[in-house]
Image (cartoon, rainbow, N blue to C red; front, top):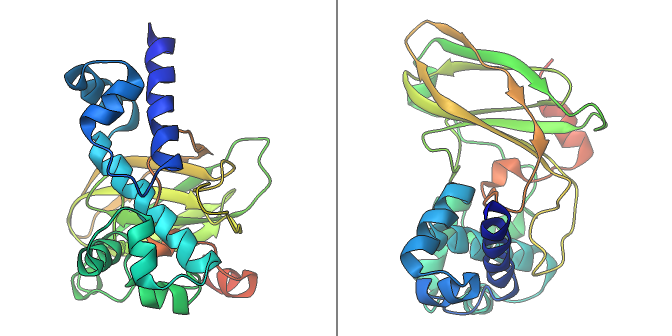
Length: 252
């Protein structure tokens, strides 16, 4: 039964990826899965960690990122291609999830973007550190570690650092609170529209991690290959950077 459920959810995700501009409803997706919409919503969230609507929104915005970098389409046309009817709504949602407006993302080629300084982070003295544990058969690469208030990262992280996948990381000046650590490999790629993120990317999400003022926490991050059930990782801080700039950001 579990295999049947996984195959059903995979069919739905494939349908989302192939039709990012279509106005797919929960009823439409449930029919693809061949389950009632109530049962479908439950199993989809169990396997992916997010509701179907949020997963579809992430796929649309990931497709928009690809279109902005790989086509000459204007922002209004990209908006239409990924299922938005209003440019203003699209631009607002894009900036909220990616961290920058579509025009800046295109201008900067989606690369080399650093999170802006935050006053709340600068005033805090807590530290989170640990080791990145990459699969033994993976060659060393660069990984961005970001701190977010939600297990599905959106916008700019509270703190972030780029490190080697076989090394250690340190996030200092972390504000008190409950946070999620998201590590994602910086894969240099030029995906064609409709392909989304590369399957070779590595990912780890850990949390919630409670941070108290002045207290150091140790949290190791076991990286694993991305799965089809993982929502797209949208923040621009996780996008591949030019090799020379990325090396400047690697923690010593």
